[in-house]
Amino acid sequence: MEESPFSSSAELRRERIFATVDSIPRGRVSTYGRIAAEAGLGRGARQVGAALRHLPKGRAVPWYRVLNAAGKSSVDAATGIARQRALLEAEGAVFAWLPEKPSGRRGLAALARVGVATPGRSGRALGT
Image (tube, rainbow, N blue to C red; front, top):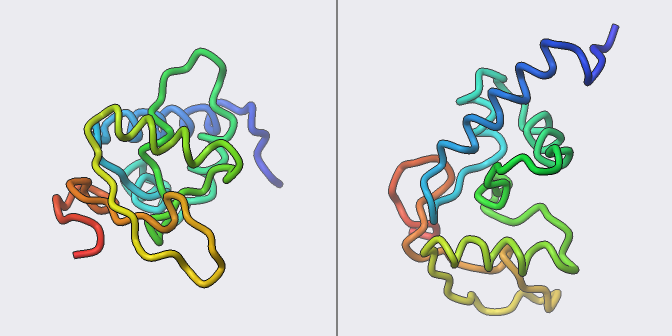
């Protein structure tokens, strides 16, 4: 039987996810999978995505610091990528454009992060 998203254990998982995302330092990023592992959810990356997608209004959680396993944005490309980048830059993250992909698409998915830690807190710059 699947657990209701409104059950107390589901709420506890969301709170652990939010607390873990809150712990990502300003100007740095992590991944859905790393957040899941640190929150004690094992391989629950999709649970992290769902929790952040349904973030309660007025709840201040830095969702924009979370990227997918490839270091790419998972937000709506129409407006979300630009907003995510702006929020990270406001925290001191620096970006450098990579050559355009054959598809012609850019965005956080095609950015090298300079001075931003790789997913997690290793301190290594992405792309090194």
